[in-house]
Length: 126
Image (cartoon, rainbow, N blue to C red):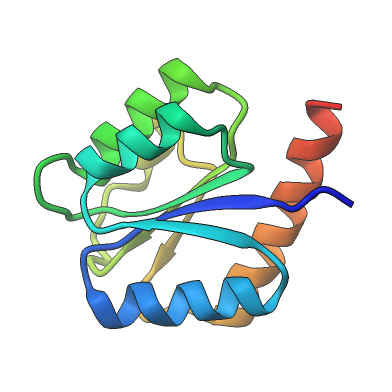
């Protein structure tokens, strides 16, 4: 079975470390970035199975990162994390997010969603 690759973009060190640990404990290969600009460099050099990104980040926002990723890799599933419960869902979905998680979120639900989306992505690209 080929290893499933995730790009995780989160500017909060504690959240990024926790999510990386959780995802790796489920068998994912996780590459992290702490800003959207660095994430774009990573995404251009590898085609991840999933992108998980925070909304509010330095240099490039989560919405801009989603838009750019959709231009390069339209089929990659994208999850948006937001500490702002008032994020305009339709803006995020219009940008190309598959699902939005508002912090604090249920990590079990996040892991279930990641698993389902990575399976669909692999089947779609097989």
